Image (cartoon, rainbow, N blue to C red; front, top):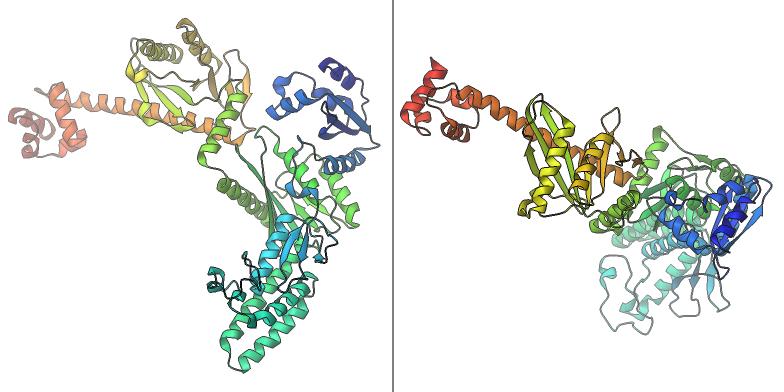
Amino acid sequence: MTFDELKDKARSLPLKPGVYIMQDAKSTVIYVGKAKALKNRVSQYFQDSASHTEKTRAMVSQIDHFDVIIADSEFEALVLECSLIKRHQPRYNILLKDSKGYPYVRLSVKEEYPKFSLASKAAQDGARYFGPFAGRHGTQEILDALRAALRLPSCGKKFPRDVGKERPCLNFHMGQCDGYCRGDDLLPRHQEAIAQAVSLLEGRFQEVQNELAAEMERAAEELRFERAAELRDRLRAIELLGKRQKVVAGSLADTDVVGFFQETGKSCFVILHYVEGELAAKDMELLDCSVEERREDIVSSLVKQYYVGRTRLPKQICLPCEIDDQVPVMRMLSEQVGSRVELLTPQRGAKMDLVKMANQNACEEVLRATTREERQNKLLEALGRMLGMEHPPRRMESYDISNTGADDMVASMVVYQDGRPLKRDYRRFKIKGLDGPNDYASMEQVLTRRFQRYLDGDEKFDQKPDLLLIDGGEQHVKIAAGVLERMGLQIPVFGMVKDDRHRTRALVHPDGREIGIQAIPAVFALIGQIQEETHRFAIEFNRQQRTGRIQGSVLDQIPGVGEKRRAQLLKHFKSVKAIKAASLEQLQEVVPKNTAQAVYSHFHS
């Protein structure tokens, strides 16, 4: 279908709830979504693409045709959407990597030394399977904890083939393995550990704990204290393992706390599982999500994928933000398990603290997974897309005017290269030839001088910026755009607009259009930082000029003190106060005796 045909079909849809299924030329499902009113929602995809995110534009360009399924209610549409996403795994939906199925733990019972591993499904291969469990990541953590608690080997050695061939590896010396590679006499011990592991995977924790406790007491009575301590540590590890496995097996956590962090490079989805008030396990998933996508939409999609299909769920799920379909999702999960599942968005108190901790966990995972350079590149790409630029703004210059009445009118030029301040390229300007304070005329003068020196080949101004940022509103930006136009330069220019609290609110185009930046926290933070740095640099220069003028006026009253002597005194003593406190001998070390006597007499007459 052509684009116009797709648009006409969308306009003909009913104003009823349902699901829409976007497909490419090969009839592959590339996106599934739900809508309260199909006509309104689907038509949005075929309107002006300027309001779309980059991901949406890419998806729309691949649509060859689409189907819709009308539902009786928004709730039915939600259930159907979850089912279709799980079945088709559409390319442009936000997907959890674990959503394709629930893993099993496989035990190779036919081998003399059986080993545990993860399997996607149970097979008829003579091995023993446990599960299915709730997620691959969490199940792998349980398997690792099981090996550590029972000190089973996790290396690549095969037994009994490799028994006695090499010295035990580092795991043995760290107390994480019993070192079965040392000899055949350890086979009974391995069989005992495997039997305990099977009991734990089957949920018979109390039975294993009783056995270990009895063995620990026997070892203590026989004065084998080292063995008793080893069993004590194993017992503690198994107690913790029991709580963690309850979560992964879906037995029932009291509370799940969801955390989400959205960065320019990657995003992370974290779930902290609490059992009886204690943190028992953590699940996390790193994702490639555009910063232009709504946080609420991403969290909603991930929560549905994570919980739909599970037979047991926690009583409460604390979310980091309110989602649009919170009520129908809560109803769907409650009907799924036959008991009430509550979705909360805490605003204060202990639960809010837990959400903050989950968000912090997600943030740390993203920071570990991405380098500073990757984050900066993604950030600049997002800013460039926001402003309609073809390329990311690698070099940005920002300008501000500072004055105190008609005196000490100055301007600052601050430079950011690749998202970081480049202080060696900062420049300061003294405003010349104006009778009184005039921000517009000052800005015009500064930009004219700066870019004229660029055109003249001045090595201090030989870099052309990719983006100009002006501390001011629409009129300031128009002045800047006019200067660039007269000089034949094509450089995007925007004003940094502040709110009533003097905080950066938006960017303004010369034609008056405002571009909101608060939707992308990283971009919002960068623009705010640039504006504050530009303002600081201008105020600092203004203060220096004013201080120098005031100090100079006092010294200028002294006979015999000209510009040269004044500069010598200020350079040595740093301030007029220090000059006043200096002795005659100290002054004579800096200036001639007659000048020193005049200065001393002026302050001590």
